[in-house]
Image (tube, rainbow, N blue to C red):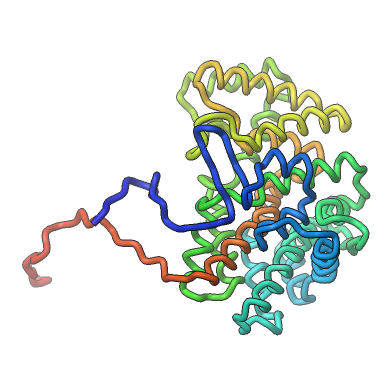
Length: 374
């Protein structure tokens, strides 16, 4: 029997048509489209359709998807009440529970047909964003803002979060960020979703598994640590470099650097670096970009580590006015497109995922010792 190392590293665990990564060449693609091509040309709604269907939508199909996503934005009243009842809870705990709750109020919850599952994917895609923005408004004692049907998913998220219509640059930047985070092959949360789906459990349970995995600090949350590092330095490049050098001297890991798969620059970081600088100039947070750039040069030069997707997304999200503890939930808002794509793919060609363990315990045949003489 084949034996693997820790963390299933290097093991091919499934066949998939959704996402391809070449960590040595720094390539990431969705359904054959390079991430740079998508970041420069696609809207997030087009990327959602691509991930689910394996092709780009024509105008009619795209308009249909947008219409469905807008129609599915409202969340059940019971979920809204729950969100208002836990204002001091961790946003990821709240998101995990609220997404699971959605199944209780979906009339198609027990319908496992392909058509029903696609409809559920649309609900999850639209309502995850609503959950995050609604929770943030309620915990701050602010009125919930009803969505604007003329806005994209990215634009509507920023509007319902902050109460201000984003300008074109801010909307486009966040739209690109959502595209960059949409999928990443068999990462921990996606694998968790596929394992659950492989039991033929429902799509709500599958993505709830994914959110639970994303909550773990070894998967999500690095960009929260990055922005805290930058803010601790007052956004000053010299101070940030000094602080990071001190951590490096103590052999402390610096968040936002290195990746299990990429051995060169994370292609997603390429676009977020540009976004961080552009938004920094527009919003008065250029100091955060400059501090980030200085830290990147230090870590790259001293440790040979490249910035990953989390490093520049930190200052980008902060410049968009997004609360720090929502950085990881936003990851879920984007990655819901990839999670649901993988769940739908698992359903289409399913086999229960049941690996074996390499037993390292005591030899079989241990003698029983009566309790009175143990």
